[in-house]
Image 1 (cartoon, rainbow, N blue to C red):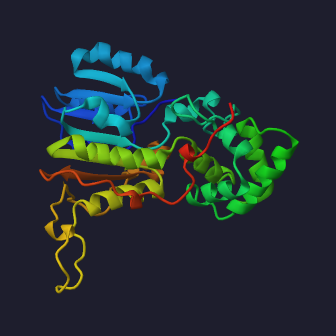
Image 2 (tube, rainbow, N blue to C red; image 1 turned 90 degrees about the horizontal axis):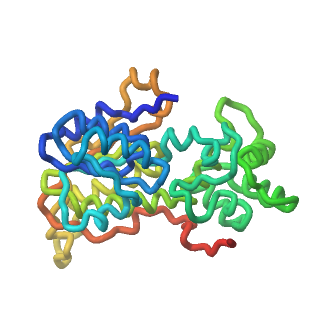
Image 3 (spheres, rainbow, N blue to C red; image 1 turned 135 degrees about the vertical axis):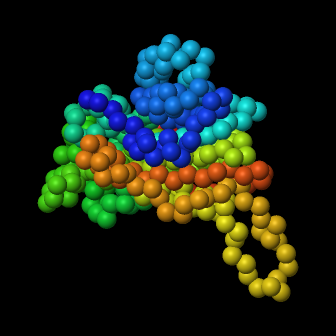
Length: 327
């Protein structure tokens, strides 16, 4: 299956690549963005990915573009750590699971392909099977409600707890069947869609990664550097939107009689030229079904110091690192 870099033209327009500049492709995946950026100018691209399966594709780009491309195996949330004091001209993020990962049945991301209930992007740590076989009903309800925005989260969680009494749930087909039986199937969208999405986000700490990645990008971008984010889920887009707005807009003032606070000395760390998200073009929607939920936001780094972390951006839901998992 051909892999399409979602909203590629819009990303390149926001980037405005120039010779000699340094760009970070924080979600390398199948290398679509990296290759297009390398072709667009005589620049340098640093690809980041925690999935070891991307090494073969990365080696092809390294061979073709010599010293202009390198891959670092790391989550993009650690870009400030791996790059150290080096400043870059842009950070590009394509959030979520890649088409390449979805197409691999053995990775267990999709109920459309029978495989082990895995869902790990890094191929290490607890799996989705660990989650559905060990988490409490209460925690699964919260995960399905918040990460999957599933209205029937309680019924889905109850069906999983009941099913695992007869043995562990180990495959994508098993889980999809359990959810379909519990929720029923009425429309085109499979009833397990939101549950699978929620488990994937939870297992990979995707919102935590995004939160930390945005803060890391703010630290390593040069003044005038660009932060470009393509997201596919309302929770992701909401976080990006809040992040750039809080760092580009002065907080609303209270009474003029109140004492001055740090907010009164506000210096924006980003400049946003377009408040609304950019949507895929109609032609792309017909060619690439994955792009239908895509949203692109971008902002320009100013010369102001980076802000402190803002944990209010994170939704209040169970976090993967809160649990001790059985071996």
